[in-house]
Figure 1: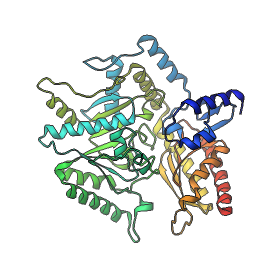
Figure 2: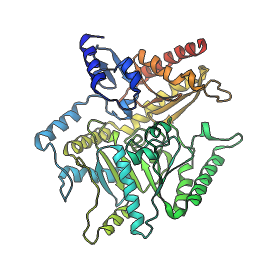
Figure 3: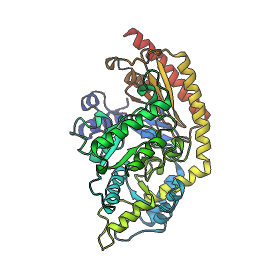
Figure 4: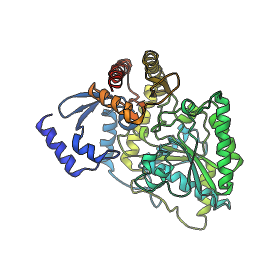
Length: 458
């Protein structure tokens, strides 16, 4: 490692706290110092190149450097580097992007609200759900039901909605009133002799039991990712969201759609809700909204939600919510240009083609690998679950560290993936071409072969 990189690493260790990083291990190993990006690849301080098959954090949909996004930001900075959307302020660009998001999401008659992160967007949906029920004379409807293995963000309420222990253990979470129902994982959740239709019925029944136990008049909303991302790329079985929606409607419970990862083409449709048949009352957007080239998020709400907000403040109050950088002019400019690029590239068709090619490669790998239990996902959001025994689906004991070992081996080969336990995640930039997809698959296959040797030796 060159001296300058060592110096950067030493400074980073001395002064920087990293997200989702073990402090002890970090101080022993140090950081990967990323110097630049090009397309789907990043380069470290020594010039080593990596193909990032996770688009960073599921988000750099248009790659790690994009001239058009840079130009959009530069132009906007030269005109207006900051202004806010409090107290009736707006701009043509903010109004236009809000209109575009309502149009793209199909939320007819709805409105958009801007924030700066997925966590903020998800918490905004919770607050709006509380307002909605209060205006309708049901102020006790405040609890939120999420699902096991869900990821919804890192702020206190958003982390409470996560169904992942590592998001809770340090902080005494979840907060009271945040509940978790079953994860719709056919591979891990179906019982012996149970088909997908029966599994869906059981999931809906379990949700209804929870609602009745808690009291329907205490439940405000149900939140879900169309496809679980950080929980292991879990695609629900056919008919799942239709049955869940029927239960929610029966008890006057809102459906909140977390599209932070799934939105803007990732699953092979403009939004994950289309891929899985979800019909939400509110939609949270981030990541792909700007290809993560600027921190911006949004919530798109159905007319009934806005009507409740309007009614609550009819006598002259003001919506008591907001973020300094909501509707930031540079973020809006970058997001507007990103959407324009998605439309020009035909993002949905492109993702379907590249996703099918990558999945085909993974399925071929799975046919010959003794430790690949399942290949799953949609579009360019794919997962490979590792198992000790394919026939019984028996998982590796945690101490075998199958997933983390693959992560290390892939990294050594110049491939960045994401291990979620023993599920290997792949969510590359949406601009990948055939060569990129083939390279990801080849490096994955080689890393899996090395992993098989490591596990058999251990």
